[in-house]
Image (cartoon, rainbow, N blue to C red; front, side):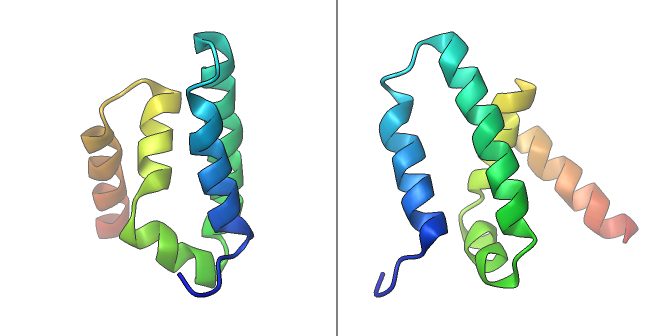
Length: 82
């Protein structure tokens, strides 16, 4: 990556800190990072990064306590409707 942006640094920091957290803190960290990713997904530049590596889908699966494939199915259904 030639020119990392804030999104990339925040993502790396999130994953670096994840192992140092107890379960209660980990769930809150997932929820907080989910909100940040939601904001980034509204930006065309970051949306492309989120599309290639579906970090947001994986985070949402952790927040909702479901398998990531369920999140992907929801996204596919949503795209078909719109």
